[in-house]
Length: 178
Image 1 (cartoon, rainbow, N blue to C red):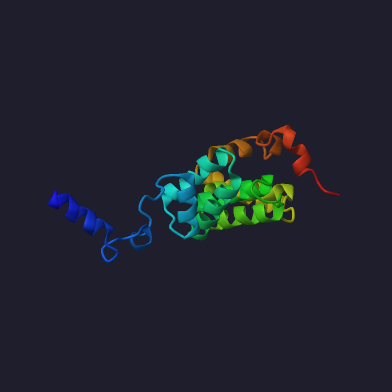
Image 2 (image 1 turned 90 degrees about the vertical axis):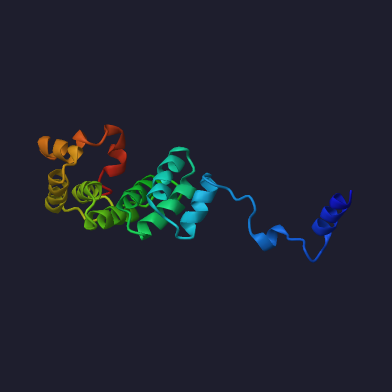
């Protein structure tokens, strides 16, 4: 009985009591979308954090995916740059912004990403988000094809006919504005 009384005294004594504040978060979220997003916003990015943005955007949480991809792009992950382009190009988690989408593609291309090269080549060929420059666009597609990107090779094989890689359902988006 003395043992129980001693334990009760020690655990209830103000001098010895510790609160959750003193110890930090006692039961933190781990491996949840919320915790992954918070880590990315703190700049704690790695390949796993960046890859989780894909699942999060596929689940429809585009704002959280955008936060993750922005942090990952800032850290140099080119795949995150191409995902930022996709989000901006479709108005997911933000406004539809073809200029920003093309800029993300250019950044990924300049960093050596084959998908970025291909996408920026398409942007240039269409004049979508950038001034139209078909010749330069083909050069980017050719670079992506030489990097081994199959869809770029497919576009080359089709004589750079953009209908080969873009569904006709997207014609409204890529049609000239004037």
